[in-house]
Image 1 (cartoon, rainbow, N blue to C red):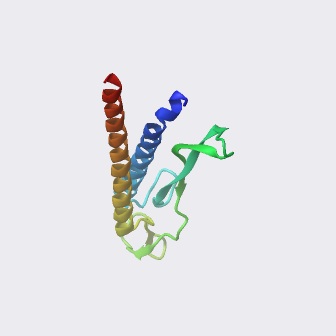
Image 2 (cartoon, helix red, strand yellow; image 1 turned 90 degrees about the vertical axis):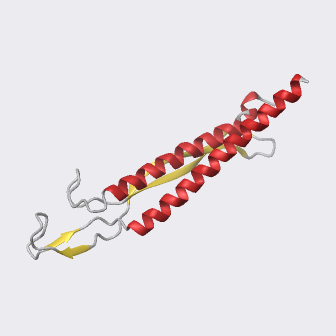
Length: 144
């Protein structure tokens, strides 16, 4: 058994931890900009999402299937959904009719996403802790 296979579970958990941490950062950024009517690229802030992809090993297994090595963030995309418009004639970003385009961030959805990301992070952390405990027990057994 190659040494990389021994540490494979730890690497998979670590990649999951990194991915969910990034997801929580993006969600926190969405929440922080929920009322930002001006952004760096002009117009109101647009909600962002992280796209994940699996990481496969280049070497093939005996059955011809690639080995799973974790997950990685491959893209940060903007939500193309329609921007809500509210009537605020005194706002500096209001159009000629008095409407302001607001960000497409919905706080209840972001909070649900944040809870699911936190739970996924906790699950990956628990997996990493269990992997470490199993390795410690194996070393104790090997020492005799």
